[in-house]
Length: 324
Image: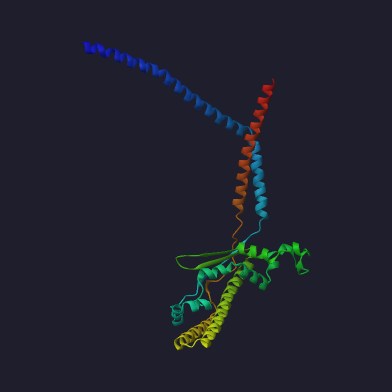
């Protein structure tokens, strides 16, 4: 009996603690509901502002739509000519290449190396400053690169001041910008593309670039072979060792063979798998996307403009109240 009587006050205290916590829970719930109501009110206010100013938003977005159409129609069509090339296959190390490895320092002093240059180095030359400038100069491409600045009747630049005429540097930047090279690592094939406003010009210039690249690499290989032969001939006259002289004769024979093959091969570095053709479809611009982007940008700007005007309006109302 005593134990039961002792437990009763504990139950009452527990009830009192629960009853005390109920007002707190009610207060928290009331606060949460109030914050939710405020968020709903704020969201409703924003929607109300957008609805009230909907004609401003429609007008600005419509203006962006119109300007997008005008801009898209002013952009000229561009065409992409493409060609697929493959590096000329290498061969197994020859006797002179193995001799070059044994000669070591002597070969490096002469600047000798076995085989052709790597495919990556040859492709790097395609977009190099020296090569592109030589192609522009050799084929007289400057007037075609800058037709808006060239007078066809006078066959000269429109502006006589040389400082206002496009330079070879300008031609290099423009041509390099429109030239793209990509290599498939799985197949080893390389796709070279050129973008121009004239489809016939795109195909013709791409053919010129590939042909000049092969010719340039061929001429470089022949010059290197001649220099190597001259250097080895000099070493033969200076060395008294019979074995060394025989090795140098073998290297000269190999360099002579390399020179003859370079002259005989029509495609020294790259073989054309799929030659450039005149494209029948434009590569750009995507006028529909341009119009959509202009319209979206104008619509977003209109929404921010409406909110900013509403903010200025409220600030003006607050200042009027404070002055009263």
